Picture (cartoon, rainbow, N blue to C red):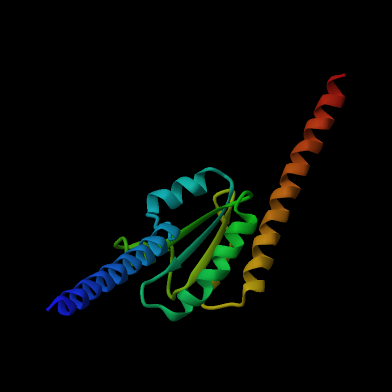
Length: 157
């Protein structure tokens, strides 16, 4: 009789631990997936900074394949640009508003305008090349502003 209670406790403990790990896994997945709305996309675009928006959907195998690429890009370039992940099903009309015909779609915005739009699955290097091109454009803009400022200051002296 005592042996039966021990097995029952072990079974309850095992189920409890499995439930805990499933909960933690789901929590970690969703906390790393920053779901955004069209309002947050628009506010990021209005900031005139570099923005990478990933439109994907639940149950989309290519979306799951690019997720690690986007995570790596965010960890490497996140200080220079904002990365927003959007579940296309989270808000009605998102696909029409941003002209999303297929997922995954990655749109890079710079100064509020579309810099590049990548539709479908691509290798990580393709995303990195576009991100680096956008960041180079950003650096060149900053450099041009600095040069204009220097000329303006030289003219005032």
